[in-house]
Image (tube, rainbow, N blue to C red; front, side, top):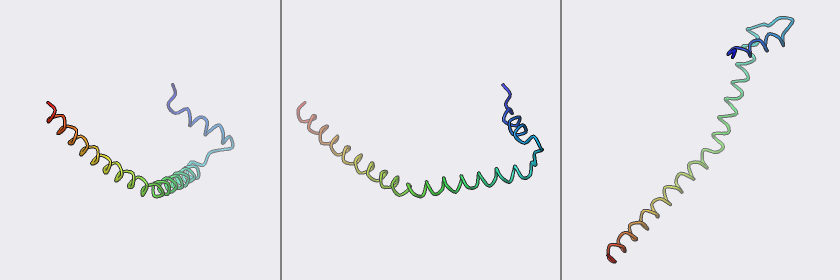
Length: 78
């Protein structure tokens, strides 16, 4: 398998010539936009993730207390 087959596609699509600097600039700009969008997505959900984490911690604390009560109850039965 040709690892760099994508380069053949790039060169073929630019039959008149390929300006590597312009292509690199375009890719860099696209990556920068994608990075910005990812950051915006992360910031949009980060507070929800934090809230979910706190809720999970609260539920775990409740389940731990219930487990303690059940273990105590089983100890009295045995």
